[in-house]
Image 1 (cartoon, rainbow over the protein chains, first blue to last red):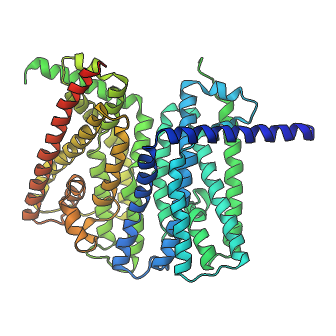
Image 2 (tube, one colour):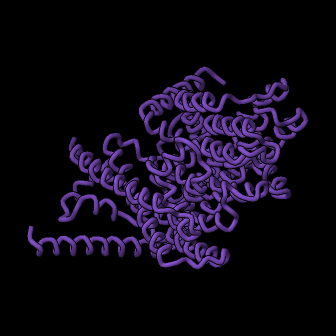
Image 3 (cartoon, each protein chain N blue to C red):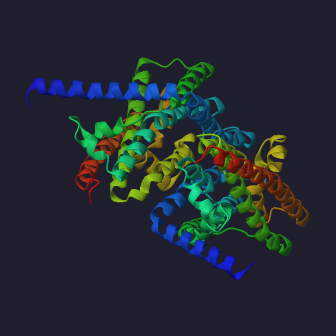
Length: 271
Length: 266
C-alpha cells in the first residue's frame, strides 16, 4: 500500500465527514424546532436526572465521599458525554440500524471508504450539542467554585480520560450496531443504552462489588464521568489512568473485530 | 356488549398477542430499558448503607423500587408512537374503516402484550427479590383491595395521556417528541428515580398531587403499605379526578383531530 493511497484514503474520509456534517447541520437549521425538541428537551432530561442527587444532599452531607460542588463538576462531564451521545452516537447508530433493516446499507457499502466510518457519520443531531456546551460551562463554573487550579499533569490526565470516555462511548455504539445485524428488532437497544447512561450521573464510588467492576471495565461509565472529575480534583491515580486506557483499548479493538464479523454476516436486502 | 362486539375484541386481542410474540426480543429490550427503578434501587440502597434516608431504610428502598418496576411494567402503553405514525402515514384511514373504534383497537393491542411482558419481566423481578432478600407488601386488607383499582387506573392514566398527546399528530409533525417532554417530567416527578416523599418540603406536596405521581408513586406506596386506608381512598379519588381531566382532553382532541384529518383528505 503506497503512501499516496493512504493519503487519498484519509482525504476521502475527511471529505465524507465534512459532507455529512454539512448536510446534518443544514437539515438542523431547516427544522429549527429541533432547538426545542432535541436541544432544550435533552438538556432538561439530563438535568432532571440530577434531581435524585439533590434529594440525596437533602438528607446527607456527602455522596460516597463527594461534596455538592464536586458532584456538580461530575454532572458537567455527564452533560458533555450525554450530549455527544445524543448528537453523534445515537443518531448515527439509529440511522444505520434502519439501513441494515431496509437493506439500503448496500449503497453505503459501495462507497470508497471504510463502512464503519460511513455508518458512524450517517447522521448528526447538532442541536443536542447544546447539552455538551452547557456541560462545558458547568465544568468551568464548578472548577472555579471549588477553587481548583489544575496542574499541567492533571490537565493531561483529564485529556486522556476524556478521549478514553468518548472512544468507549463510540465503541459501545458500534457494539449495539453490530448486534442489530443479528436481530433487526434490536432497534431499541439505543433506548436501553440511554437508561444505562443514568448510572453515569453518580460517582463510581457509590457502587460496590460486581457493579463497580462492570462500570469500570465493561460499560466504563467511571471513565466517562467520575475519572474526568477526579482528575481535576486531584484524586486520580496512575492505576486508574492505566485502567481507563486499557479498558478503552480492549473495548475499541473488540468492537472493531465484532463489527467486522457482523458485517460479513450481512445478507443485504435481497435475502 | 353484544356477542359480535366481543368477538371483534377477541380477534384484536389475538392480533395483539401475535404481534407481541413476533417481536418478543424487542419487548424484552423494552422491559430491560424500563429497569430504571432497579438502577435507583442499587443507588439508594448504597446511599442508605450508613442509616435510613428520611423514612426509608435499605429494605424500604428495596420494596419501593421493586414495586415501582412491577407497576411500571403493568401500566405501560405505547399508543402515542403508533397513533403518531398512523396519522402521519395515513394508516389511520384503514383503521377508521374497520367495524371497531380505533381507540378500542389500541386498547386491545396494548393490553394484549401485557401477559407476555409480565412473563419477560417476572424473572428480572424474581432475581432482584432473591438478591435483595424480599420486599414487604401491605397487610392492610383495605389497601390490598384498593391496589387493583389503583393499578387499573394507573394504566388508564398512562394510556389516555398518550392518546391525548398522540392526537396532536393531527396538527403537528412531531407529536411523539412532545411525549418525550411528558415522560421527562414523569421520570422526575412520578417517583421513578426517588420516592416523592423524600423531596424537599414544599416540592413534595406539589409533586404528590400531579398526575405523574397518580400514575406510579401512589400505586407503589399503596402496594408496599406506606398509606393508611384514608390516604389510599384519597389517592384513588385523585386518580379519578386526573382520569376525568385527561380523558376529557383526549376525547376532545380525538374528535377535533378527526375533523382536521378528514379536512386535509388523508
